[in-house]
Image 1 (cartoon, rainbow, N blue to C red):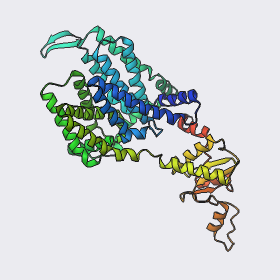
Image 2: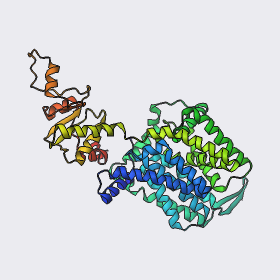
Image 3: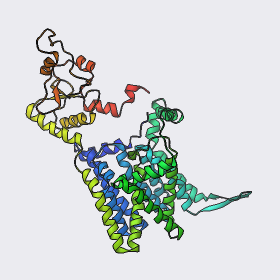
Length: 459
């Protein structure tokens, strides 16, 4: 069990306080997802030209995973933006001489990204590459292996500035660990030494090259799985041809090295390669795909235009499918309208059966809270019917009645019209706990469970 740094929540809290809007967290994620489009445009423009920048920006804007990140509210959804910013700053500081504050800022951006989700650790390879790109080395000594070079004092100082920025972002997490018996350090150590052996995922080079990368590339661009293999093959051949002709500029070589290191690291990673946890690689996928399209346009304008148009048309169906609101959101809004019509001007307590289908319940709870009718006590108790909890026990049931017990319970806990919601007002708090419905969902309860969970677990 891991925990992440507070930077994700701090951003949401700050934007909420700034706008004072009930849907501020979602708005912020949408803004961040949109900002990633402009960041990728800036990167591609720097590496190629404005036309290529527009191509890459179009790929990002139409990417189904990127559209999804604009709607969801999970911490990995910010990773693409911080990965893109990290690469943009990397290209800036390696292209010209920049003062220490730029390196410090770069370290801060990297650190915040890692705090948000540890997948960003894959971009730490950019730190040594940035020093290498400075081309400032001194001959440290001569030995049997030849000359040994070491970064100059200036290069090393810049590297330390980046490390300082990185370290500053981890101060909150360090304070948390110091106050909670090294919870994070202990659990990471346990996972690395023993936890990773709890499951086995069969991987070999064949599966990795034939299945994983084509599927991941196709998924990121919203293409059918079958398109993955030819797409990756074309990308590989294009870069191989450019490298052979020695026409690839240094920034591209540095990015290829960074990608190659992560390529090898993922091959030998022992866990599941879940696409949602690999968003830090999205900038590479968009840039490399855009590079190939740019080369095709340079080779043959009309062929490049047709290829780009075909790719965009192929991406559209998956992107369009991501546009509507998620199912829990739609159902929650529908049930909110129903509650307002059936139970007007009433306070509502909302329960979740063992947190099954929790996304739907919490979505409704939040809408009730926004409408100032959610309460933790009193009012009308509601919950989405689930056979795993069933109807709470009640002394009102007459076992000698000719009416079956289940029918009696249905009369005590009636459904709202045309809805899976049932009224639980008749149940006592102890009966709700006994049957698995637990305690009512409240903002304070969610805050304690999400942010202050260690008070309960006492790690």
